[in-house]
Length: 200
Image 1 (cartoon, one colour):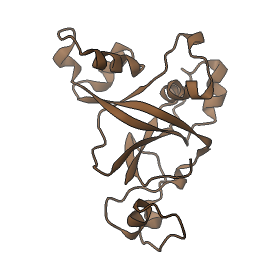
Image 2: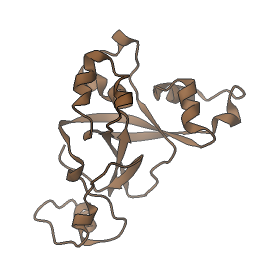
Image 3: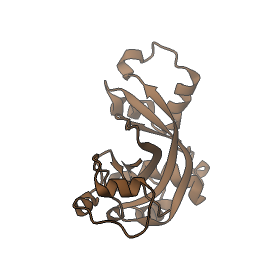
């Protein structure tokens, strides 16, 4: 099995974890973000439907976080912070095909609202591309933010290390030539497959 590691800007990550952290969004007229918008969708049949979120070091995005919580969010930058289960996926057509001309199905309308993006941000991001909304379910925070080096990329091959992780065995790992190369050293531009992580 494989999980997905996703990079997210601090502001959008803040809207996802605020409720779990006990932060009051209503005070700032903000809504909880329950759908993550992406241009590419994980389609590997071995994806276990879990998504781990890495908070990028985007200081411009951080400035959008209310000052009251900015210091706490800043501590999470450059770390993997939480994991959620993707129980549903919404398809968004290129906005030019339907802008102002088609009535959305209710679920898709709500999913667009739950991305937290304004209409302009939504259109600017997608442009002429298809989009996919990953519904955020069963969010769990890590007790402590985790460094990238704690995770291994899924190599996509049937190597010894991948077979070991996929089997769920957690005792002394076997020697694998790809073990060192599989270690994550930089965050994904959008997302990447990783080996399942049991350190929650």
